[in-house]
Amino acid sequence: MATEPIISEGRELRRGWTTGTCATAATKAAFSALCGMGFPDPVTVALPRGGTASLTLADARLLDRSAMAAVIKDAGDDPDVTHGCRIEALVQRGPAGSGVEFRAGEGVGMVTRPGLPIPPGEPAVNPGPRRMMLNALEEVAAASGEPADLVVTISIPGGEAIAAKTWNPRLGIVGGLSILGTTGIVVPFSCSAWIHSIHRGIDVARAAGLTHVAASTGSTSEAAVQAHYRLPDFALLDMGDFVGGTLKYLRAHPVPRLTLAGGFAKLTKLAQGAMDLHSSRNPMRPDALGNLLSELAAPEELVAKAGTANTALELLQEADRCQFPLAGHVAARARAVAQESVGEDVAVEVRVYDRSGKEIGWARGWS
Image (spheres, one colour):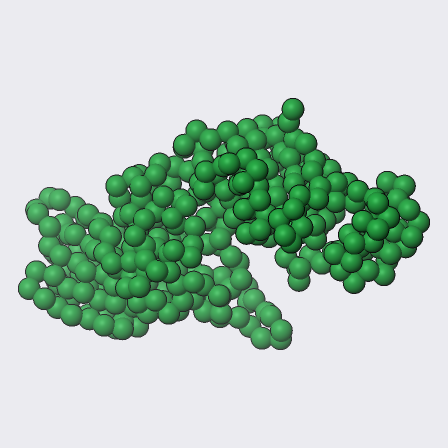
């Protein structure tokens, strides 16, 4: 499958493999050995959107009525939290006619809350990876003449500790990580896992019947808005820089009320129309801020400062000295941009916080 190269700082970044691809490779290798065909190494698996991946085994053991294979996840040049994890598949014979049953081993979570693609009571192995594994097992069954009546247990040793740093506990996935991947490929710095978590957070909130969610750019604003509204953890969306992805998903999967919470610099970018708030991809534009201040009839010295300020904080401090409510105006502009993007089925408000968690600007979204 041909893909465009991703260039950063003059070099091409390496793509990697999702946890789903790694689990599929380990599962296919283990079943191949169980069928008497040995452990293929490297093992080649089909990717969901065409092409194949060949992965090297880190471990392989053939037992009496089961086989285990393991793969070390290589996420390429992406800063993936599961890079370097050992992903194991234990494949055991099941009763005749039983088909394939997936189980969660060490470090793989269980779903406990509705709204996710997998129902409560099931291991957190997403539909895409399940299809990949089922296809690989059917391939081996066809080649060997053996039935694919199997129990497949996926494990990620140490996964429970890693999962504590992810969204999984908030989403109601307990005991470990999720097996993810829609394409099978990790694209460097695409942050697909983060965006996936935002979407699943919205799904869980909707399934729980929540009418109000809060999407925050960081932990300080999240803590402040949660304290203000006393929202449950699963009403909180760790949006980070991905306001565009959050609003786009909410437009198609609305929740009646949305609070956008963040620091002044991030929300200034939203007020300027940016849907990605990362500093390197969308730096603050002093010219646009200067134009905004002119439109708002701000003091002349503040308008002039917009053209020379090194940071948004410097401009905000100057606005405070001029007793001009800049954060409130930015909140209003950011709310207008967000409301247009998300559509009329979601009422948006914006709350701006300083670094201590104090609210410095607010734009009302509902009465």
